Image (tube, rainbow, N blue to C red; front, side, top):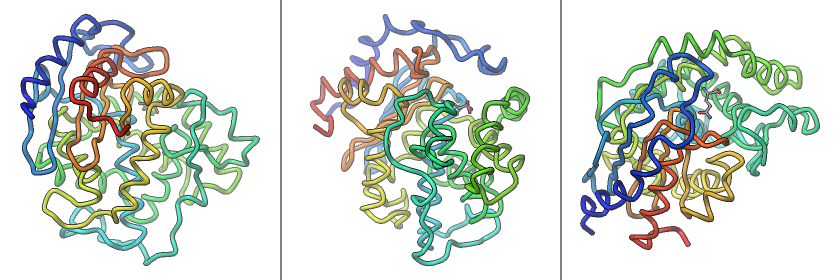
Amino acid sequence: MDYRAVLEEVAAYARPYVGQGQVADYIPALERVSPDRFGIAVADIHGAVYGVGDWEVPFSVQSISKAFSLALVMAQSHGSQGGNGTYGANGVQGGPGGDDIWQRVGREPSGTPFNSLVQLEAENGIPRNPFINAGALVVTDRLQTLTGDASTSMLHFLREESGNPDLAFDQAVADSEAEHGDRNAALAHFMASFGNLENPVPSVIQHYFWQCSIEMSCRDLAVAGGFLARHGLRADGSRLLEAREAKRINAVMLTCGTYDAAGEFAYRVGLPAKSGVGGGIIAVIPGRCTLCVWSPALDARGNSVAGAAALDHFTTLTGWSVF
Ligand code: GLN
């Protein structure tokens, strides 16, 4: 496969879509990003990386972090961190076996916007899935208990997996999220009232905002998400997740990773994917490669318009969807 040629063709196809839709404007720090950006990268399972356009420009990962926090909780919960485990903020390892995040969060598509409150009351404070905000707050809460510092654990993990030691939080984005964080605070308080948080609400939402604020490029994200294509193996060959756990994360990405557009996304692209309101989308082709595409203008559901078009064309050209 000539990845570079395929990516060039995908970028040309996506070009007319770039700038269609709207850049996230709920916080000023995101609103300032130019809608004209477009980049795409592919990291194959053997470590080769290819990219075109703005594929090395860092952007705000936002909800893409939800896939990584779930992976870390699953990895920590069975005590098999793989590698040298240096990403654990205080060296705390999850206990063997017993810990089960799925008691506290479901794995069904929500059919509602990513920040919706409506299902939580009827469903007793158990969010539908880990990739809407409510579910991600529960996962972050669990990661906080397991590591003592959820956001730093994730940052260290992403630095290791991407091979980019310069990854950092964007403090301005994190502060701005906190300043405009009433909705996320409401979700967290509501779940706390049902006994579904282990840590104080202010700490959980702060770590959640920091995780969302991490800046990464398409290159960094495609490489860091490699373990999802390698059935749980990290870049250095050590095991982060059992193969069946990587399968489950990919399955939940397929059914829930693009919020209330997951059905449409599966129809068009046919890959496990996780999007964020920074305009990034990672997508996994198990056994082959991990992709990341970025273009900041979003559709009404919060997914990158040009990013979805690019992934659609990628799977059409290559025939590499999971279907
Ligand atoms: N930080 C954003 C929020 O919590 C993330 C949402 C997203 O990327 N969909 O609202």
